[in-house]
Every structure is written in C-alpha cells, then in structure tokens.
Image (tube, rainbow, N blue to C red):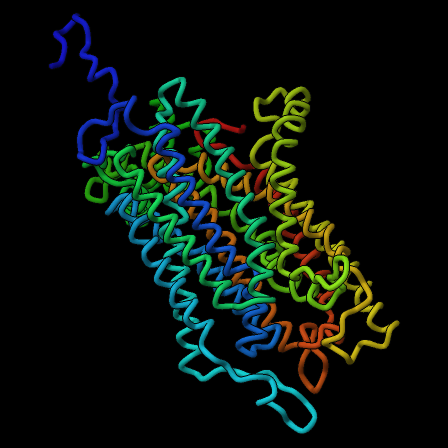
Length: 570
C-alpha cells in the first residue's frame, strides 16, 4: 500500500500519527483518533477524580475531630500525613506506567482502587460512633473515639484512596496530552490550549466541591458527603472507558528505559570513583560533545563516560546524552528542596485555617451558617479569576519589559509565588492575633464552643493570597518539572513536583508534633490547644513566615546558578 520511492504517498500513511496506535494496535489515524474529542473524555474523568479528592480532603479535619474524637493537633497531623502520602504515591504510579503497563491500564486500575477506597470510606462514615453524652467525666466532656477496629477500617479506607490517587493523578493528564501530536502545527496549538482548559476545569470543580459538599457533610450527613464523591468517581471511570475507541496510545520502544539509563549513570560513576574526571571532561569538550557549563556541574557524573573494565582505554559505559539526562534530573533537587518551606505553608489551608473559621461568625442573613471548609473555595475562585489576568495582562506587560515570550522565566515565576506565600503567613498571624484579642475582650477564652463576634471574612485575604501563590508557584513548578526532565520522564517529572507537596505535608505534621510536645508540657496550654481561644496559632504562623523567608533566600541562591536543560529559560 505504500507509495513507490519518489511517487505519491499513501493517504493512509499521511493520516497516521507517528509513535501512536489505536485501541486495536493499528497505526492511529489522525482524523479518527485523539484530539479534542478524546481529550473531553479524559478531562471529564480528571474532573471527577479531583471532585472526589477535594470532597474528602477539604473537610477531613472536622470529621476527625467531630466524629472520631481526635484532638486538633492530632487531626492536623493525620490530614497532613494522608495528604503527604497522596502526593508521594504519584511517583510510584508514574514509574509503573512509564516502565511497565502504560498510562491507560494504570488509570483504570488506579480508578478501581480509588472507587473501592471511597466506598469503604462511605461505609465507615455511616457506622455508629459514641455520642458526646457517653463520654462525660464529672462536668467535663472529653472527646469520644470509636472502637479500635472501626478506626483501623477508616484509615485503611483513607489510605486506599491515596493509593488510587497515586496512579490516577500523574497519568491522566499526561495521557490527555498524548492525544495531541506536538509535531503537527495545528495540534501543537491545541495541545497548549488543552493545558489551559485543564487547569481551569480542575479548579472550577474545587469551588463546587468545597462549598456544596462541605455544607452536606457539616449539616446533613457524613455518609452522604462521602458517598457523593464515590458516585462521581464511578461516573468518571465510565466516561473514561467510553472514549477508549477514540484514544491514541503511545508505542513503547525496546530501547533502554529512561530509569535504566539514568540509574546506570550513577552506578557507573560510583564504580569509576577513582578515575580522573578532568581527563574525561577535557576529552569530550575537545570533541564538542559536552557543553562547558554542563561539564563543570556535577563533574563526578562525567566518570560514567568510561567503562569499568576499560579505564585505561576509551571504552564507554554510558553515552553523553545519558550523562546530560542524569545531570538534568539532579539539578532539580536543590530547587525542589528549597520549595519545601512553601509546601509546608501550602498544607495549612485544609487544617488550621478551617478550624479557625469554625470558631468565627459564619452567618449569612438569618439562620444560615456557611461551612468553615467552604472558604477553601476562594482559593479555587481566585485561581480561576487570576489565570486569565496573568495570561492576558501580566505576561504581555512582562514580555515588553523582558523580551521573553513567556514574560518571566519559570524560576522567576516560582520565586514570586514563594514571596507572596511568606506575606500570606504574616497576614494569617495578624488575623489570628485579632481573633484571640476578640475572644479576650468578650470573655470567651474559656468557652471553646462559642461563636466569636468576628466575621469569618477576616480569613479571606489569606485564602485569596493562597490562590494567587498557586498561580505563580504551583503552576510554575509543574511547568518547570515537566520541561526540565528528559522527554520520556515527563510524567515522572510531574510526579516529582507532587512529591514536593507530599514531603511538605509530612514536614508540617512533624513540625506540629514537635511544637505540641515543646509547648504543651507541665500543664501548659500548647500552641495547638483543642480550645483555639487558648492556643497560639499566631506564633505558629510567625514561625512559618520565618521558614518561608529562609526558604526563599536559599531558593534565590540556587535559582541564580541554575542551568536550564535544553537551553530553555522561558
């Protein structure tokens, strides 16, 4: 069917997409596969996944304190640990997808685990728990905890959701981008638009989730509040399966995988530790194979260019490209490490911010109180509003000044968000000082269940700033880790980005535990006392502001000397 050399090409070959096949293993035809038709199915599945996740995460701290009887610091630690696990698991999911079973199969398996976890979580929410009247000591009410077996069942269900999230989160966005051929001029433009609409859809659904579902969970029923995300996830999986016949699937090559290549570089460099790196670098620079700036950074990896059994000759164990890929990955770690302070701050919106709002006046009109967790919707709302302003106003102005197509570099974008994050913690500390002063002025310090005569809208500035920092730092980190890793590892690059926030959640949990032990001894009121009117969250926010300042300083140091992979600084 192929045309003869020099003759007209077969229409079949002209319509196929290189490196892609359809659901039957045949070369994917451009008119009948991929594109927006396929992307809509995948975007719908992701919206359902995010709906389910935020339906659990946004109000989890109130479930832990009200239904499971945990103290405020213990609940905050539990939320941070679960969030951290959910942010680290994508690294495992991306590895399995890229190295073994592919993204499509990983998404289906992960979705089934996700649904199973959500179903079990719904069951755990409808099981009876002891009432507060059953837990009286003299005239004092103490927190009630369900039976140990019920607690184990709940946390097993919760972490099964995190496992499902780990396979779903890093693969589905990459699979959506696979539906567009970046080498085709028309589809390349559509691919860029796909990422914009992806972000818009994800954060739009969080607004609904964090307002409607939070109200159902606080005022109607926790079982219903957890069951709706489960139903949504089932519908999302069905929608994803409906698009199976339209998808483009990547062809897996038989050459060494990227993990194997990069891992071999580190192993070879370790084996050749006693070799002289300068001779290796000099030889390759003379041949024009290594860039001067690359050869001077992480020079110990240049030792991988000589084979272990042929140190005296010119035998090669790894190629120049392998070494450059390894250096590109290694350069990401200082940037990621210095963003951990930002990730710790990022974890606060779903924990202490929510508990603060619970003590404040949340009334709108007569007889209606907005759920404290619904304030998180303002993060998503500010993102939805700021992204068009950033793209249509900020970038053109910056482009005029810097003459860069993107206006500012990826690292500059991240740094701006980190600065705003530190400012948000300063504002949070000042607002908490105001809240504590209000409790003292009205004699409500020892009445923890009383509603303070201070409107919950005082918390809006810090929520809105969180949304603005997301537009700069979170989106900047995603773009940075996607762009700066080897092409075959881009889904893993996004997973590494998620890991920053996972480690940040764990560090937040550790910090809370350490401060709780340091400030709560000898009968003292800790900074995280269950009675927030006796606590000192303002001190904690000042600590986070200080950590943010230190993290930003270290980030600027490493960002200044960062060498962009593939020469990109956009």
